[in-house]
Figure (tube, rainbow, N blue to C red):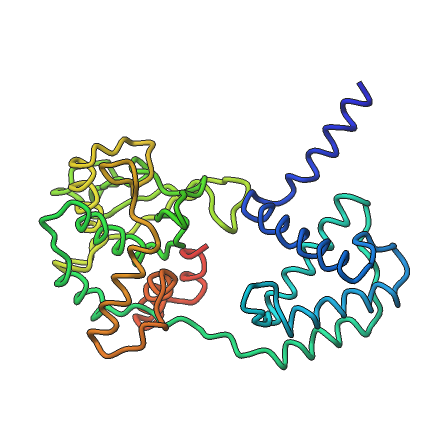
Length: 312
């Protein structure tokens, strides 16, 4: 019994972070082991040899800054380096039960690398004008375009992250919004048909920052705008869903052939429209939808705390 419980304890340690983080940390750990082998250094560091640990972590950080870990030997920036070091420390905690100590020189080195790194290029928000241009450019007689437009609207009004409503890099996240998680509600908060809807309700079953799968419910009222309205967004999704045969428990972005609307589809639309409007297409990504909605709320006078709660 004790032996089996001990094995379970060890197995559960690996589940302390989400699946995506486990995969990412595993890649970083393999890079670290490869680099240590090249340098003829141990991959497992001692607990309290602060000077040696600082030197080895510091040397690895500088190597990444100069060369990265890619075919082009393009150096990593501070955020990437910090993420990789964090993964190495996590593996030490799981495998050895301790986090290798470093001295005061290590944070000074990381601060220097942060100062030398390029400034983070922030994405620009999608505007109402861009959304209206997208509406004009889509062929809404096609069910896939109907679905894309509906996804744009619910992503914009509910401040969704891409993994919450899109297929990301060929796969759906475990917490992706399902077709049945969206409902029309009337003014008395009863489930209703689209023609009687005063609002849209959404059940979120987890998220990037909600690893424990707590359900959260959000509502957005109809705007009265004939184009930019969350109720109309769900109506477009339902229209496409009937054609695609989407079931209640299936991802909301699923299409008729079992594939789905992915982040690449949305980025392609954003970049096309941004070029048409004379904007730099590199400034737009799926994140632009989320920050576009939050920017619109802020400009309309919403309190920052309300926006924070809505965006989770």
